Amino acid sequence: MSATPPETPKKRFPLPLDKLGGRGAAPVRELLMPQRHLQQATADAARRAAPSGLGMDSAGVRLRMVQRLQREGLRDERVLQALAGVPRHEFVDTALAIQAYEDTSLPIGHGQTISKPSVVGRMIELLLARPGASKEAGAPMGRVLEIGTGCGYQAAVLARLARQVTSIERIKPLHDKARASLAALNLGGVRLVYGDGRLGHAPSGPYDGIIAAAGGDDLPEAWMAQLAPGGRLVAPMQAPGGRGQVLVVVDHLQETGASRFVRTLHEAVLFVPLKSGVM
Image (cartoon, rainbow, N blue to C red; front, side):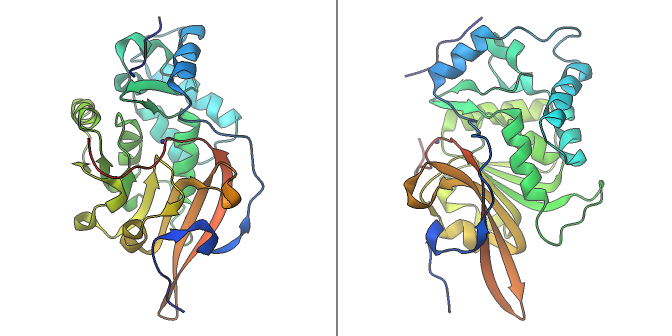
């Protein structure tokens, strides 16, 4: 069944990508498209068959999704376990729930989509791999800032991996919907904020990790200022030369009392534009 979508020396900020210090770009991998055009996402949902076997609330259905993601290259066991523990169907419209455990984006209203599980997993995997981070399975991240709550799915996954998650959404109906969905799961350590994601949220910072679900052509000053020493930021940003978007990782390093930001480029992606203000 398909749904009709509604009508992504001292440094100065903001920092465009070409001004950040870097170690070079990693080879560009297959294009990740977590937020394709809504028409295409809806068409995909209509074409795909419902998961076979147990019901949508079954851990077995989520396990099969995770096994597919693992075969496709997702390696961090902590991320795999977190994905297996979150009922993704609770974050999409009822009409599209049967597609929840396929690796596809789905419309959630207001011109937005829920990202593919593979993209959520990859970005969180990069976030957890920050320099100096503990590799122990039971060691959570500290404080994480999410830019763009959307339906709340990624925040729910992050809540299983971090001590505290602060998530900002600029679209009030999505903020309210995410609050209801997350409350039903009784997740602790998640704070939802209705506001402008470009401003971050200083009261809960600084953050060990910042993850963004929208991309622009610069890194907002607030994000960089709120990234703790030793912290890592993962965001889709405009590629150098304007050739689409790529995942950008920025590490805040502190050596001999001096801070510096080092960036690396990863997969090509396609996210909604990063916008200012609230609505």
